[in-house]
Amino acid sequence: MAVLKSSWKRFISCLVAGFCLSVAHSNARRTADDMTALLNKLIKGYDKRLRPNFGGEPVVITVGLWVLSIDSINVVDMDYKLDFFLRQLWTDPRLRHDWNETLALGNTMMDKLWVPDTYFENSKSSKFHKVTMVNKLLSISPDGGVHYNARVTVRASCPMDLRLFPFDQQHCNLNIESYGYNANNMQYRWENRTDKGVAVNKKLDDMPQYNLTGASTKSYFTVYYSGNWSRLGASFGFVRRSGYFLIHIYAPCALIVILSWISFCIPPDATAARIALGITSVLTITTILNMLNTAMPKVSYVKAIDWYLIGSFLFVFGVLVEYTFVLWIVNVHNKRLRRLMIEQEIQEAEEEKQHSSRKHGMNGSVTSKNTRESHGYDYELFESYSAFSDKAKKPSSHLCDRSKAKRHASSEMEQRPLTYPRTPHCRARTVCLDLIDPDCIDDYARLFFPIMFILFNVTYWLKFVVL
Image (cartoon, rainbow, N blue to C red):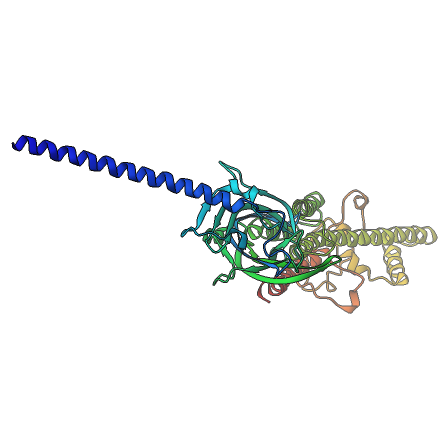
């Protein structure tokens, strides 16, 4: 009896389970059928060529952006690449339904419903993502509200002012507008959120060359020949990171300028060494300048980094000019000394021929003195240079107070270059302005160039960075 009772219980349980499954399957089938009937009902007689509220109030499109990435900020082409989710919401009374939930539809319904013809006014190129399927979302609420979401990549133009490059700040805009509907038919507005309709991925704070300072939005109307058009504008602020340029441009230029000052420590008669060092410095600065300009747009104004490169170029070029002046001074001295020595020899030969009866030493001494006085030059200053004698002289404490010992020039003067004794104290005096010691020029340059370069750097960094 107990066995029979247990069997009946099992049989009844199976019947109940089977009945529940059949009811659930019937409900699911009825739900799917109801959804299909509802969708067919919505698109039946729906004309997607007409906007919502046709002939009445303009349809309001609420727009929101979720920015995924910002990259490829191109200075040469002055554009930037933006990847984001574009949300558009509007109300279409023709799509109201009695379903208690929002209808989540795929992209298959896009071709059957009206969607706004939104485009990006300053876009150079745009595309929708299609992997693995078209990245679009459509949902319809019971009151006819339509939510349209799509992932878009846009390369938009971004005019830049590079006068402060690489310490500049740029603002890149993204303009949203309808292509075919003017303000009387369609109007845009941003979503009413704390971020003003534009949400930015936090990972954008770690971009390699820029820091994102923020995003701002605005809505306004633009005037065309065909009427007024509603437009939304999103502006992204960027501050350029200058660390790369400090390491690869500014530091090498400063070191090259300092390296060029080694020329002041090389003797003036080492022409090959000083010329090679100067030309190498000039060519290196020129190479850096050309390398930078190849990666920059051909703008008609001078950028901040150009000012520094031009200043560095002038400093290394000034080193070459300084050595050219030194060589010119040496050449002037050599010509003057040779001319005086030739005149002296001619005068002595004439005096010896006229006064052959006198002693050679006395006549030569008196004649030489008279000849020197007649030319108006201070021969004792010129004779103090080592070109007049093979013996080394101990220089005095001043350029114009050299040794007054008289010497005779030899034929070796034409074969060897003139060398000048160092003057311990290079001070200018009015009595000898026509005589400049080339070594003194190098002494002055060793002080003048570093001081001017320090002042140049202080002025530059105060103007373009601090102020």
